[in-house]
Amino acid sequence: MKTYNIPVEATLEVIGGKWKVVILCHLKKGTKRTSELKRLMPGITQKMLTQQLRELAEDDVIQRKVYDQVPPKVEYSLTDYGSSLGAILDSLCAWGESHLEKNGNTSMLITADE
Image 1 (cartoon, one colour):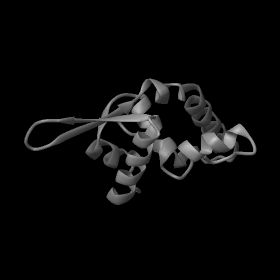
Image 2 (cartoon, helix red, strand yellow):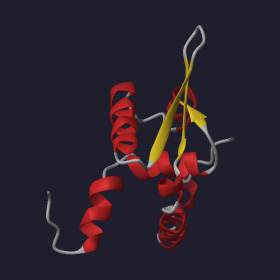
Image 3 (tube, rainbow, N blue to C red):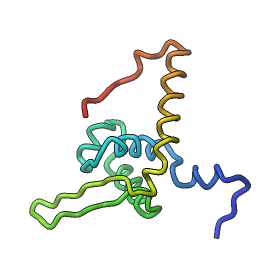
Image 4 (spheres, rainbow, N blue to C red):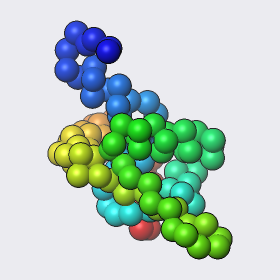
């Protein structure tokens, strides 16, 4: 079992990295298919998206639902455990907006139609 010096290390172990929080913010708004997530995050590779989704599912933060149909359909959504991150995600988004405004970089914010 891994040991941590402070609890935030355990949090970052689960949601750390460039893409996990972005994925979680999109899933906080509702269930998404892989292709939808890829469209919302044009900078992520398919391999990285798959890896990040797999890790989040292993940590029980998101659930992967596979439909028995052709062509295959897979959807991702937050678990109840993942939904408990809602306040953290909201705070991160609010801080990011403030940071962009403080530095005059609001034009860098791209909003996607969901």
